Image 1 (cartoon, rainbow, N blue to C red):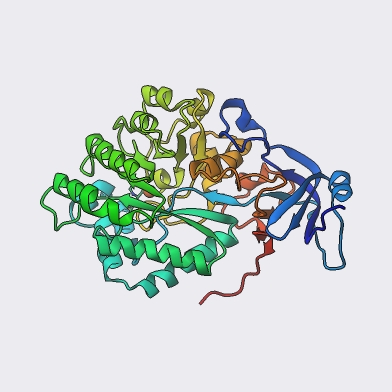
Image 2: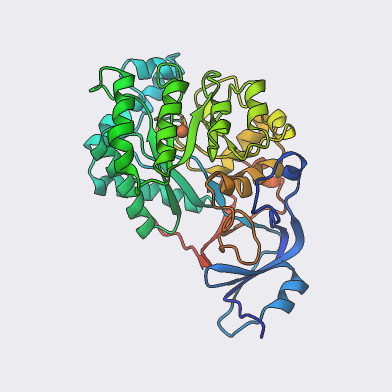
Length: 421
Ligand code: NIG
Ligand code: FE
């Protein structure tokens, strides 16, 4: 008996399957391929994809019932939902005043050193109650979903006390219950709070007091390794301790300067290293074929007015697995849209349209260890699917600054967007 489909998407001008790379991320020339099926068809039962292929293939494999819903995707592109593998989703307040200061010439790290920047958001987040944080983050998730993001990684790091970091992670847990977008929680060691007299004392506190409490609440541990923030030695200590406690690892690496953190990430077998705008040749070699995914964040470099972006073409050709994410946060990249990030990646890092789509789907799934269930359209995978009102994939980064996503399907359910208050 043929399985019955609840939902069939028919006649996609281009069905981007991204198939065949669930066990390891794409590198090199594999990034040029999107597994495109012209006049493609996708069948879904409950929250799973049950068939994916040409119209003839799929309609031969599945059966329809009177309740089967059909969506005609002719002249459109169908692809997996975007996976935003690096965000700072949960925070209070805004930093538009600092935006204005930066336009007039103030530096990001100078603002941080003078007690603003991340500290500004820490003060607001500490002062906010859980309900307020849920309401605000939920709104951001709504926007993400409308713009085609179906899974996000989210970091704490604006609490910097056991109580306030736990509060951020509890908010993520709540969001997972009330919002269709899946939220993957990360405990981020972001900076040293003012109540500690030295970074070393805070690092000791993190290792001995915070990490054991965050276990169970966060899947990953991340640290911001940068001059004036935390050294590679601090990062090594924290990430080694976190690994022993069962956390998977992530790192903010080589963003504003080359700190040698790309190598550190590869040596620690971290799931990902993010930013990497200043990665060295040696760092590229260390990350190549290492299993650690490079999450590039051109939105942050753009919004900070940097003239240095990660050398994506060199990284890709030398075998580094590259993903893209928003870095959504109130300071260095306040956008929820993966679509604008794809455009920025093409323009600033010279990635091709096919490469940016691979980087925002299957490779992003690897960056959060979820490629067995999401990131491509294949039978057995979760039905997280988007339909874009464009005739071909090249238009996705090309027609920029607007929302091209027409329909979002999350776990097999067609999402309807009302007005959020
Ligand atoms: O990834 N680099 C450090 N952390 C964030 C920014 C956080 C903030 O400015 O609030 C980032 O860019
Ligand atoms: Fe970040």
